[in-house]
Image (cartoon, rainbow, N blue to C red; front, side, top):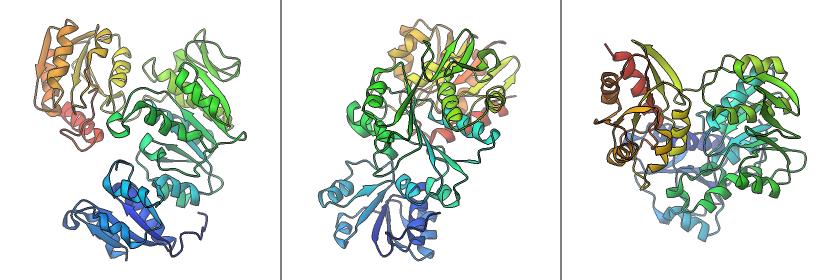
Length: 450
């Protein structure tokens, strides 16, 4: 960890806790900043805040008082989930107080370089693949970010011999100033989180921040099949390395005649790849580029791709019961992710879908529902998804109260040889705290089946 001095005696407000807020507050306290934590959850219900209070950090809980900003704070470290339209953030920006996210702190103290991954879909799979390729290749990687490991905590343990592989959301990327990864990846861009960002333009700009500080000595890996992504690459100062599942490239990674190539070198035959789904080829290609740029040999890449079956909650194979295969794709919080999940299978599917209503419809799913024989719905969007299923010509539709009940209901509708797929196409927050909780409940319900 770099022993930086510029936070010493600096008055910093950490706004919002959860994992990243706790990590940021603890790190700033270690760096001798005067730290105040403000979290909306009452102190009596907030063990994280209680722990910080016991360590000597000032803690204010139960509300976000605007007048707190009159106490001379020089910096705000914001929880990524707090919108820039939040009254506290708007007032801070009016007062000229810089606002960053915890990722920026991690970058400032890290002795290790970063490989950073963002995009609408595929971030977690790509991050995990790169981590595993570097690990098998003997490169001493660490994993961090939106995938669950707090970046500022990981960075404190990192040395120059490590590489931090970090998954970043648009929320996190809006709060960076100097963050500069040695390798950046933009997997793809589709409509997402517009309730947070307001416009697609702001969402795309947030994603583009991953390369804004890169120079000609760094690399930017991009999807060559998306004009919007290529436009970001054209504006970047980094060396652009493209990947494509559809055409041969002079440089970068592509698929040809059943093989994955990097710079015209055969790396692995697609028949040897264990991870299901054609959409995962994009994730694999970008991971291969990052691994090759990091000096990983082909045999290490082969070992990973020949055995890796997916990350938890992303097209995760749970088990087979009486000839039915169960898959947990709870991380499919948007329509595109569910489209990709459905097209990964040739078998008949019983689809479990529903969740938070963000105001959108689901008719974009219709062309992908040909092998869906039944739909089990739940949550706020149950009726909308049912109407889409009807328009798609699906005869068997059943509504239930929640995911736990959906599992036995789907089993009753299924036959030997079917796939029972949880791929909600919606966020979980109407019924579950996170998509992970939703996925875990699905897994538990599958294992409870008689």
